[in-house]
Image (cartoon, rainbow, N blue to C red; front, side, top):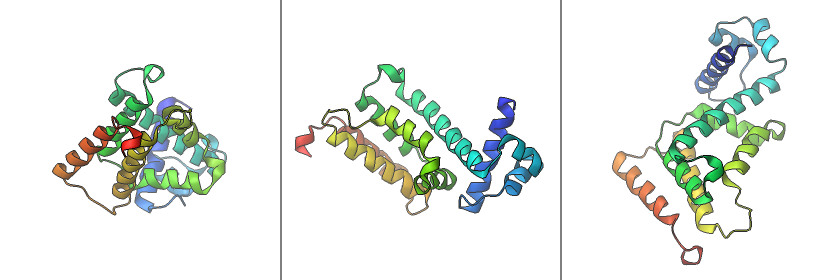
Length: 180
């Protein structure tokens, strides 16, 4: 499969997930959205699980590319503090979709789909490396909470409130864990 074809198909699958509001997508719905036949889609993704893993990998890949831009230095040369700050800014920018939330929730619900998501989390935010990262973990969890709340439509944050939240979270990345 040409890379652009794969990207087009996976983007179509995400549009279907966004529209459906659930990960219960069908070959037919994705094929129709991608302009393929069901058989054509099945040629590229022999099972629904293979398609779901590819969708998760697609979202993780996009997230990592965007996070690298925000990070501004190579991942290998960054600190956990820098990566958490980058995530705060990335997650705090809004623009999240319900489809992305649904895809990641499906990975949690069905562990056989979770490998790409868990690899991303460990690569970027391995909090268990022996360092006291309590304040960073708190910030990361809060940024994730903001992302989830907006992705699910539970909360809409206006620009001044968003700026105040992001500033407070970034400030906490400098905090002594014992002071929190």
